[in-house]
Length: 482
Image (cartoon, rainbow, N blue to C red):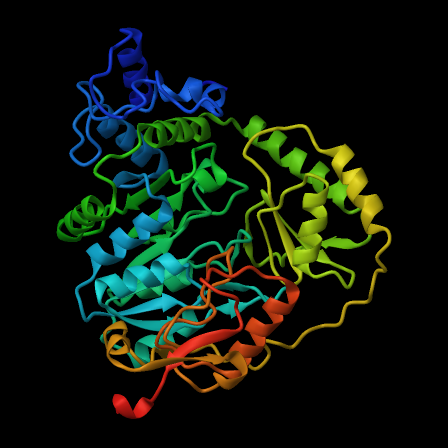
Protein backbone atom coordinates (compact mmCIF):
# COMPACT_ATOMS: atom_id res chain seq x y z
CA UNK A 1 0.00 0.00 0.00
CA UNK A 2 1.45 3.36 -1.04
CA UNK A 3 0.08 6.22 1.05
CA UNK A 4 -0.67 9.58 -0.52
CA UNK A 5 0.62 12.81 0.96
CA UNK A 6 -0.59 13.66 4.49
CA UNK A 7 0.02 17.42 5.03
CA UNK A 8 -1.05 17.65 8.66
CA UNK A 9 0.79 14.53 9.78
CA UNK A 10 3.91 15.80 8.02
CA UNK A 11 3.62 19.19 9.74
CA UNK A 12 3.40 17.59 13.19
CA UNK A 13 6.40 15.35 12.41
CA UNK A 14 8.39 18.43 11.38
CA UNK A 15 7.47 20.15 14.63
CA UNK A 16 8.59 17.14 16.68
CA UNK A 17 11.96 16.86 14.92
CA UNK A 18 13.21 19.95 16.76
CA UNK A 19 12.59 18.33 20.18
CA UNK A 20 10.65 21.44 21.29
CA UNK A 21 10.24 22.56 24.89
CA UNK A 22 6.60 23.27 25.70
CA UNK A 23 5.59 26.51 27.40
CA UNK A 24 2.06 26.13 26.05
CA UNK A 25 -1.00 23.96 26.55
CA UNK A 26 -1.81 21.06 26.87
CA UNK A 27 -0.63 20.49 30.41
CA UNK A 28 1.14 17.17 29.82
CA UNK A 29 3.93 19.18 28.09
CA UNK A 30 4.55 16.91 25.11
CA UNK A 31 4.14 13.88 27.34
CA UNK A 32 6.42 14.83 30.23
CA UNK A 33 3.66 14.55 32.81
CA UNK A 34 0.92 11.94 32.69
CA UNK A 35 -0.77 9.44 34.97
CA UNK A 36 1.55 6.48 35.40
CA UNK A 37 -1.24 3.89 35.08
CA UNK A 38 -1.67 4.68 31.37
CA UNK A 39 1.56 6.48 30.50
CA UNK A 40 3.13 3.59 28.60
CA UNK A 41 -0.01 3.10 26.53
CA UNK A 42 -0.28 6.82 25.70
CA UNK A 43 3.41 7.70 25.43
CA UNK A 44 3.67 7.41 21.67
CA UNK A 45 0.66 9.63 21.03
CA UNK A 46 1.28 12.39 23.56
CA UNK A 47 3.88 14.15 21.44
CA UNK A 48 1.29 14.54 18.70
CA UNK A 49 -1.27 16.06 21.06
CA UNK A 50 -0.32 19.64 20.26
CA UNK A 51 -2.09 22.95 19.81
CA UNK A 52 -2.25 25.84 17.32
CA UNK A 53 1.51 26.44 17.09
CA UNK A 54 3.47 28.07 14.28
CA UNK A 55 3.36 25.76 11.28
CA UNK A 56 0.48 23.64 12.61
CA UNK A 57 -2.38 25.85 11.36
CA UNK A 58 -5.78 26.60 12.97
CA UNK A 59 -8.89 24.49 12.28
CA UNK A 60 -11.20 27.51 12.55
CA UNK A 61 -9.18 29.64 10.10
CA UNK A 62 -6.99 27.19 8.18
CA UNK A 63 -4.40 28.48 5.71
CA UNK A 64 -1.66 25.86 5.98
CA UNK A 65 -1.40 22.16 6.79
CA UNK A 66 -5.02 21.71 7.94
CA UNK A 67 -6.30 23.54 4.87
CA UNK A 68 -4.20 21.31 2.62
CA UNK A 69 -5.39 18.17 4.42
CA UNK A 70 -9.04 19.21 4.07
CA UNK A 71 -8.54 19.93 0.36
CA UNK A 72 -7.09 16.45 -0.17
CA UNK A 73 -10.12 14.98 1.60
CA UNK A 74 -12.48 17.05 -0.57
CA UNK A 75 -10.70 15.83 -3.68
CA UNK A 76 -10.95 12.19 -2.59
CA UNK A 77 -14.65 12.47 -1.71
CA UNK A 78 -15.44 14.59 -4.79
CA UNK A 79 -16.78 17.43 -2.66
CA UNK A 80 -16.45 21.15 -3.27
CA UNK A 81 -15.20 21.53 0.28
CA UNK A 82 -14.57 19.24 3.23
CA UNK A 83 -14.34 20.24 6.88
CA UNK A 84 -12.63 18.21 9.62
CA UNK A 85 -14.89 17.48 12.60
CA UNK A 86 -13.56 16.72 16.09
CA UNK A 87 -16.95 16.16 17.72
CA UNK A 88 -18.18 13.23 15.67
CA UNK A 89 -21.04 13.28 13.18
CA UNK A 90 -23.04 14.82 16.02
CA UNK A 91 -21.34 18.20 15.60
CA UNK A 92 -21.66 17.89 11.82
CA UNK A 93 -25.39 17.29 12.07
CA UNK A 94 -25.76 20.26 14.41
CA UNK A 95 -23.80 22.58 12.13
CA UNK A 96 -25.31 21.58 8.78
CA UNK A 97 -28.90 21.86 10.01
CA UNK A 98 -28.33 25.06 11.99
CA UNK A 99 -26.47 26.64 9.09
CA UNK A 100 -28.77 25.52 6.28
CA UNK A 101 -32.16 26.61 7.61
CA UNK A 102 -33.82 29.63 9.14
CA UNK A 103 -35.86 29.57 12.33
CA UNK A 104 -39.44 28.60 11.50
CA UNK A 105 -38.59 26.74 8.28
CA UNK A 106 -40.49 23.51 7.62
CA UNK A 107 -38.07 20.60 7.14
CA UNK A 108 -38.73 16.95 6.31
CA UNK A 109 -36.74 14.52 8.46
CA UNK A 110 -36.46 10.75 8.35
CA UNK A 111 -38.22 9.39 11.45
CA UNK A 112 -35.45 6.95 12.36
CA UNK A 113 -32.75 9.64 12.41
CA UNK A 114 -30.09 9.77 15.10
CA UNK A 115 -30.84 11.81 18.21
CA UNK A 116 -28.25 14.43 17.15
CA UNK A 117 -30.40 15.25 14.11
CA UNK A 118 -33.42 15.94 16.31
CA UNK A 119 -31.30 17.97 18.71
CA UNK A 120 -30.10 20.02 15.74
CA UNK A 121 -33.65 20.61 14.53
CA UNK A 122 -34.62 21.82 18.00
CA UNK A 123 -31.62 24.13 18.29
CA UNK A 124 -32.24 25.52 14.81
CA UNK A 125 -35.89 26.21 15.68
CA UNK A 126 -37.28 24.61 12.54
CA UNK A 127 -40.58 22.78 12.19
CA UNK A 128 -39.79 19.08 11.64
CA UNK A 129 -42.12 16.93 9.57
CA UNK A 130 -41.39 13.29 10.33
CA UNK A 131 -41.28 10.96 7.32
CA UNK A 132 -41.97 7.29 7.95
CA UNK A 133 -39.30 5.16 6.25
CA UNK A 134 -39.84 1.92 4.44
CA UNK A 135 -39.13 -1.20 6.48
CA UNK A 136 -37.54 -4.49 5.60
CA UNK A 137 -40.28 -7.03 6.26
CA UNK A 138 -37.95 -9.79 7.45
CA UNK A 139 -35.82 -7.87 9.96
CA UNK A 140 -38.40 -5.11 10.62
CA UNK A 141 -35.59 -2.54 10.30
CA UNK A 142 -36.06 0.86 8.62
CA UNK A 143 -34.22 1.14 5.29
CA UNK A 144 -34.90 4.59 3.84
CA UNK A 145 -37.32 7.17 2.49
CA UNK A 146 -38.99 6.33 -0.83
CA UNK A 147 -39.76 8.83 -3.56
CA UNK A 148 -43.49 8.11 -3.06
CA UNK A 149 -43.30 9.16 0.59
CA UNK A 150 -41.59 12.42 -0.33
CA UNK A 151 -44.13 13.14 -3.09
CA UNK A 152 -46.98 12.77 -0.60
CA UNK A 153 -45.19 14.87 2.01
CA UNK A 154 -44.55 17.72 -0.43
CA UNK A 155 -48.22 17.67 -1.41
CA UNK A 156 -49.17 18.12 2.24
CA UNK A 157 -46.38 20.59 3.10
CA UNK A 158 -45.46 22.51 -0.08
CA UNK A 159 -43.72 25.18 2.03
CA UNK A 160 -40.94 22.73 3.05
CA UNK A 161 -37.37 23.97 2.63
CA UNK A 162 -35.35 20.81 3.07
CA UNK A 163 -35.01 17.08 3.55
CA UNK A 164 -32.79 15.38 6.15
CA UNK A 165 -31.97 11.75 5.39
CA UNK A 166 -30.04 8.92 7.04
CA UNK A 167 -27.98 6.70 4.75
CA UNK A 168 -27.31 3.86 5.24
CA UNK A 169 -29.00 2.61 8.41
CA UNK A 170 -26.83 1.40 11.31
CA UNK A 171 -26.77 -2.08 9.77
CA UNK A 172 -25.24 -0.73 6.56
CA UNK A 173 -28.40 -1.18 4.50
CA UNK A 174 -30.54 1.23 2.49
CA UNK A 175 -32.86 1.45 -0.45
CA UNK A 176 -31.52 3.34 -3.47
CA UNK A 177 -32.10 7.04 -2.71
CA UNK A 178 -31.30 8.39 -6.18
CA UNK A 179 -34.95 8.92 -7.15
CA UNK A 180 -35.79 10.46 -3.76
CA UNK A 181 -32.90 12.93 -3.90
CA UNK A 182 -33.56 13.78 -7.55
CA UNK A 183 -37.20 14.56 -6.78
CA UNK A 184 -36.19 16.65 -3.76
CA UNK A 185 -33.72 18.71 -5.79
CA UNK A 186 -36.25 19.17 -8.60
CA UNK A 187 -38.52 20.79 -6.02
CA UNK A 188 -35.73 22.98 -4.65
CA UNK A 189 -35.33 21.23 -1.34
CA UNK A 190 -31.98 21.34 0.42
CA UNK A 191 -30.89 17.73 0.93
CA UNK A 192 -28.77 17.05 4.02
CA UNK A 193 -27.61 13.52 4.79
CA UNK A 194 -26.37 11.91 7.98
CA UNK A 195 -24.04 9.43 6.31
CA UNK A 196 -22.20 8.50 9.50
CA UNK A 197 -21.60 4.90 8.47
CA UNK A 198 -20.44 5.52 4.90
CA UNK A 199 -17.06 7.29 5.06
CA UNK A 200 -15.50 4.26 3.32
CA UNK A 201 -17.91 4.24 0.36
CA UNK A 202 -15.52 6.55 -1.50
CA UNK A 203 -13.15 3.63 -2.17
CA UNK A 204 -15.64 2.49 -4.81
CA UNK A 205 -17.24 -0.79 -5.87
CA UNK A 206 -18.51 -3.05 -4.39
CA UNK A 207 -19.40 -0.44 -1.78
CA UNK A 208 -22.52 1.66 -2.50
CA UNK A 209 -22.32 5.23 -3.78
CA UNK A 210 -22.32 8.17 -1.38
CA UNK A 211 -25.36 10.44 -1.56
CA UNK A 212 -22.89 13.28 -2.22
CA UNK A 213 -22.57 11.77 -5.70
CA UNK A 214 -26.37 11.58 -6.01
CA UNK A 215 -26.92 15.31 -5.55
CA UNK A 216 -27.09 15.75 -1.77
CA UNK A 217 -26.06 19.28 -0.73
CA UNK A 218 -24.32 18.46 2.55
CA UNK A 219 -23.13 15.08 3.82
CA UNK A 220 -21.70 14.22 7.24
CA UNK A 221 -19.58 11.09 7.73
CA UNK A 222 -18.03 9.49 10.82
CA UNK A 223 -14.54 8.53 9.65
CA UNK A 224 -13.98 6.73 12.95
CA UNK A 225 -16.84 4.30 12.40
CA UNK A 226 -15.55 2.46 9.34
CA UNK A 227 -12.14 3.98 8.55
CA UNK A 228 -9.00 3.67 10.73
CA UNK A 229 -9.50 6.99 12.56
CA UNK A 230 -9.75 7.95 16.22
CA UNK A 231 -13.16 8.13 17.86
CA UNK A 232 -15.02 11.41 17.13
CA UNK A 233 -13.02 12.02 13.93
CA UNK A 234 -15.52 12.94 11.19
CA UNK A 235 -16.01 14.81 7.92
CA UNK A 236 -18.53 17.35 6.67
CA UNK A 237 -18.71 17.53 2.86
CA UNK A 238 -20.32 20.31 0.84
CA UNK A 239 -21.55 19.85 -2.75
CA UNK A 240 -20.44 22.28 -5.44
CA UNK A 241 -24.05 23.36 -6.07
CA UNK A 242 -24.65 24.67 -2.54
CA UNK A 243 -24.88 28.45 -2.34
CA UNK A 244 -21.95 30.40 -0.90
CA UNK A 245 -24.29 31.94 1.67
CA UNK A 246 -25.34 28.59 3.15
CA UNK A 247 -21.77 27.30 2.94
CA UNK A 248 -20.64 30.32 4.96
CA UNK A 249 -23.49 29.80 7.46
CA UNK A 250 -22.46 26.18 8.00
CA UNK A 251 -18.83 27.20 8.47
CA UNK A 252 -19.91 29.77 11.04
CA UNK A 253 -22.00 27.14 12.79
CA UNK A 254 -18.96 24.88 13.00
CA UNK A 255 -17.09 27.59 14.87
CA UNK A 256 -19.99 27.72 17.32
CA UNK A 257 -20.41 23.98 17.91
CA UNK A 258 -16.81 22.74 17.64
CA UNK A 259 -14.24 23.17 20.37
CA UNK A 260 -11.97 26.22 20.16
CA UNK A 261 -9.18 23.79 21.15
CA UNK A 262 -9.57 21.00 18.58
CA UNK A 263 -7.56 17.82 19.06
CA UNK A 264 -4.62 17.47 16.69
CA UNK A 265 -4.68 13.75 17.37
CA UNK A 266 -8.16 13.58 15.87
CA UNK A 267 -7.32 15.84 12.94
CA UNK A 268 -4.13 13.92 12.16
CA UNK A 269 -6.11 10.67 12.23
CA UNK A 270 -8.52 12.18 9.68
CA UNK A 271 -5.59 13.06 7.44
CA UNK A 272 -4.29 9.51 7.83
CA UNK A 273 -7.68 7.82 7.39
CA UNK A 274 -8.28 9.63 4.09
CA UNK A 275 -4.83 8.62 2.89
CA UNK A 276 -5.37 5.01 4.00
CA UNK A 277 -8.65 4.73 2.09
CA UNK A 278 -7.29 6.51 -0.97
CA UNK A 279 -4.28 4.18 -1.13
CA UNK A 280 -6.29 0.95 -1.08
CA UNK A 281 -5.88 -1.01 -4.30
CA UNK A 282 -8.59 -3.16 -5.86
CA UNK A 283 -6.56 -6.22 -4.93
CA UNK A 284 -6.38 -5.14 -1.29
CA UNK A 285 -10.11 -4.45 -1.17
CA UNK A 286 -10.77 -7.91 -2.60
CA UNK A 287 -8.55 -9.42 0.10
CA UNK A 288 -10.56 -7.59 2.77
CA UNK A 289 -13.86 -8.83 1.38
CA UNK A 290 -12.53 -12.36 1.00
CA UNK A 291 -11.73 -12.30 4.72
CA UNK A 292 -15.27 -11.17 5.50
CA UNK A 293 -16.68 -14.01 3.41
CA UNK A 294 -14.46 -16.53 5.21
CA UNK A 295 -15.67 -15.14 8.53
CA UNK A 296 -19.32 -15.42 7.44
CA UNK A 297 -18.72 -18.97 6.25
CA UNK A 298 -17.43 -19.88 9.70
CA UNK A 299 -20.47 -18.28 11.32
CA UNK A 300 -22.83 -20.40 9.20
CA UNK A 301 -21.55 -23.50 11.00
CA UNK A 302 -23.30 -22.28 14.16
CA UNK A 303 -26.89 -23.53 13.91
CA UNK A 304 -28.20 -21.20 16.62
CA UNK A 305 -27.61 -18.12 14.47
CA UNK A 306 -28.44 -17.12 10.91
CA UNK A 307 -26.74 -14.51 8.76
CA UNK A 308 -29.26 -12.07 7.27
CA UNK A 309 -29.08 -12.09 3.47
CA UNK A 310 -30.49 -8.78 2.33
CA UNK A 311 -32.57 -8.54 -0.88
CA UNK A 312 -30.63 -7.71 -4.04
CA UNK A 313 -32.64 -4.50 -4.44
CA UNK A 314 -31.02 -3.01 -1.31
CA UNK A 315 -27.69 -1.20 -1.17
CA UNK A 316 -25.56 -3.04 1.39
CA UNK A 317 -22.21 -2.50 3.06
CA UNK A 318 -20.25 -5.77 2.71
CA UNK A 319 -18.27 -4.99 5.89
CA UNK A 320 -21.35 -5.33 8.08
CA UNK A 321 -22.69 -8.71 9.11
CA UNK A 322 -26.17 -8.89 10.66
CA UNK A 323 -26.88 -12.09 12.59
CA UNK A 324 -30.34 -13.25 13.59
CA UNK A 325 -30.95 -15.50 16.57
CA UNK A 326 -32.64 -18.81 15.71
CA UNK A 327 -33.28 -19.77 19.35
CA UNK A 328 -35.29 -18.34 22.23
CA UNK A 329 -32.34 -16.09 23.02
CA UNK A 330 -32.99 -12.42 22.30
CA UNK A 331 -30.47 -10.47 20.31
CA UNK A 332 -29.23 -8.87 23.54
CA UNK A 333 -28.73 -12.26 25.17
CA UNK A 334 -26.94 -13.50 22.07
CA UNK A 335 -24.68 -10.46 22.25
CA UNK A 336 -23.86 -11.39 25.85
CA UNK A 337 -22.88 -14.87 24.65
CA UNK A 338 -20.55 -13.34 22.09
CA UNK A 339 -18.91 -11.09 24.68
CA UNK A 340 -18.51 -14.02 27.09
CA UNK A 341 -16.13 -15.44 24.50
CA UNK A 342 -14.28 -12.17 23.86
CA UNK A 343 -16.18 -11.38 20.68
CA UNK A 344 -17.56 -7.85 21.01
CA UNK A 345 -20.38 -6.91 18.59
CA UNK A 346 -21.27 -3.34 17.66
CA UNK A 347 -24.87 -3.57 18.86
CA UNK A 348 -27.89 -5.79 19.35
CA UNK A 349 -31.63 -5.42 19.02
CA UNK A 350 -34.38 -7.77 20.11
CA UNK A 351 -33.62 -10.27 17.33
CA UNK A 352 -30.24 -9.38 15.84
CA UNK A 353 -26.57 -8.82 16.54
CA UNK A 354 -24.49 -6.56 14.32
CA UNK A 355 -20.83 -7.36 13.64
CA UNK A 356 -18.70 -4.68 11.96
CA UNK A 357 -15.59 -5.75 10.08
CA UNK A 358 -12.66 -3.43 9.41
CA UNK A 359 -11.27 -2.09 6.15
CA UNK A 360 -8.19 -4.28 6.44
CA UNK A 361 -7.07 -7.89 6.72
CA UNK A 362 -6.85 -9.44 10.17
CA UNK A 363 -6.59 -12.93 11.64
CA UNK A 364 -9.95 -14.60 12.14
CA UNK A 365 -10.87 -15.46 15.77
CA UNK A 366 -11.36 -19.19 15.13
CA UNK A 367 -10.68 -20.17 18.76
CA UNK A 368 -13.31 -17.76 20.10
CA UNK A 369 -15.82 -18.83 17.46
CA UNK A 370 -15.29 -22.50 18.32
CA UNK A 371 -15.93 -21.76 22.00
CA UNK A 372 -19.05 -19.75 21.10
CA UNK A 373 -20.35 -22.60 18.97
CA UNK A 374 -19.96 -25.02 21.87
CA UNK A 375 -21.74 -22.68 24.30
CA UNK A 376 -24.69 -22.18 21.94
CA UNK A 377 -25.20 -25.89 21.28
CA UNK A 378 -27.32 -26.15 24.46
CA UNK A 379 -30.02 -23.93 22.88
CA UNK A 380 -32.68 -25.50 20.71
CA UNK A 381 -33.15 -24.13 17.22
CA UNK A 382 -36.74 -23.04 16.76
CA UNK A 383 -38.78 -22.54 13.63
CA UNK A 384 -39.12 -18.89 12.68
CA UNK A 385 -42.57 -17.36 12.63
CA UNK A 386 -43.00 -14.46 10.24
CA UNK A 387 -43.91 -11.18 11.87
CA UNK A 388 -46.49 -8.70 10.61
CA UNK A 389 -45.50 -5.91 12.99
CA UNK A 390 -45.16 -3.35 10.21
CA UNK A 391 -47.84 -4.66 7.90
CA UNK A 392 -50.27 -1.88 8.69
CA UNK A 393 -47.82 1.01 8.81
CA UNK A 394 -48.65 3.63 6.19
CA UNK A 395 -45.78 5.55 4.67
CA UNK A 396 -46.70 9.09 5.62
CA UNK A 397 -45.65 12.40 7.11
CA UNK A 398 -46.30 13.51 10.66
CA UNK A 399 -46.00 16.81 12.47
CA UNK A 400 -45.14 16.94 16.16
CA UNK A 401 -48.08 17.85 18.38
CA UNK A 402 -46.04 20.45 20.28
CA UNK A 403 -42.83 22.33 19.50
CA UNK A 404 -39.92 22.44 21.93
CA UNK A 405 -40.87 26.02 22.84
CA UNK A 406 -44.48 25.02 23.58
CA UNK A 407 -43.33 22.04 25.62
CA UNK A 408 -41.42 24.30 27.99
CA UNK A 409 -44.62 26.17 28.83
CA UNK A 410 -46.93 23.30 29.72
CA UNK A 411 -47.22 21.30 32.97
CA UNK A 412 -45.82 17.79 32.93
CA UNK A 413 -46.10 14.59 34.91
CA UNK A 414 -44.47 11.18 34.93
CA UNK A 415 -46.66 8.15 34.21
CA UNK A 416 -46.12 4.43 33.63
CA UNK A 417 -45.93 3.47 29.97
CA UNK A 418 -49.25 1.64 30.01
CA UNK A 419 -50.90 4.91 31.12
CA UNK A 420 -49.10 6.97 28.48
CA UNK A 421 -51.06 5.89 25.39
CA UNK A 422 -52.48 8.95 23.58
CA UNK A 423 -50.52 11.32 25.81
CA UNK A 424 -47.94 13.76 24.39
CA UNK A 425 -44.42 12.87 25.38
CA UNK A 426 -42.32 15.56 27.05
CA UNK A 427 -39.05 13.65 26.71
CA UNK A 428 -37.23 11.37 24.31
CA UNK A 429 -37.01 7.61 24.87
CA UNK A 430 -33.76 6.44 23.29
CA UNK A 431 -32.32 2.92 23.22
CA UNK A 432 -28.54 3.10 22.85
CA UNK A 433 -27.03 1.95 20.64
CA UNK A 434 -28.20 2.91 18.04
CA UNK A 435 -29.31 6.25 19.53
CA UNK A 436 -32.50 6.51 17.47
CA UNK A 437 -35.42 7.88 19.53
CA UNK A 438 -38.50 5.68 19.78
CA UNK A 439 -40.42 8.63 21.19
CA UNK A 440 -39.66 12.29 20.55
CA UNK A 441 -40.57 15.25 22.78
CA UNK A 442 -43.84 16.68 21.45
CA UNK A 443 -44.88 13.41 19.82
CA UNK A 444 -48.13 11.65 20.72
CA UNK A 445 -47.49 8.21 22.20
CA UNK A 446 -49.34 5.35 20.50
CA UNK A 447 -50.19 1.89 21.74
CA UNK A 448 -47.77 0.47 19.19
CA UNK A 449 -44.98 2.69 20.56
CA UNK A 450 -45.56 1.50 24.13
CA UNK A 451 -45.56 -2.12 22.97
CA UNK A 452 -42.27 -1.54 21.16
CA UNK A 453 -40.66 -0.02 24.27
CA UNK A 454 -41.92 -2.79 26.53
CA UNK A 455 -40.66 -5.37 24.06
CA UNK A 456 -37.19 -3.84 24.08
CA UNK A 457 -37.14 -3.61 27.88
CA UNK A 458 -38.10 -7.27 28.17
CA UNK A 459 -35.42 -8.23 25.64
CA UNK A 460 -32.72 -6.42 27.63
CA UNK A 461 -32.18 -3.19 25.70
CA UNK A 462 -30.18 -0.36 27.24
CA UNK A 463 -31.73 3.11 27.31
CA UNK A 464 -30.13 6.51 27.76
CA UNK A 465 -32.02 7.71 30.80
CA UNK A 466 -31.39 8.97 34.31
CA UNK A 467 -33.55 6.30 35.86
CA UNK A 468 -35.01 2.87 35.27
CA UNK A 469 -37.10 2.77 32.11
CA UNK A 470 -40.59 2.13 33.44
CA UNK A 471 -42.32 5.47 32.95
CA UNK A 472 -42.22 8.53 30.74
CA UNK A 473 -42.64 12.28 31.19
CA UNK A 474 -45.80 13.51 29.44
CA UNK A 475 -47.80 16.69 29.14
CA UNK A 476 -50.07 16.90 32.17
CA UNK A 477 -53.04 18.62 30.58
CA UNK A 478 -53.72 19.47 26.97
CA UNK A 479 -56.21 22.12 28.11
CA UNK A 480 -53.27 24.41 28.95
CA UNK A 481 -52.30 24.88 25.29
CA UNK A 482 -55.57 24.47 23.45
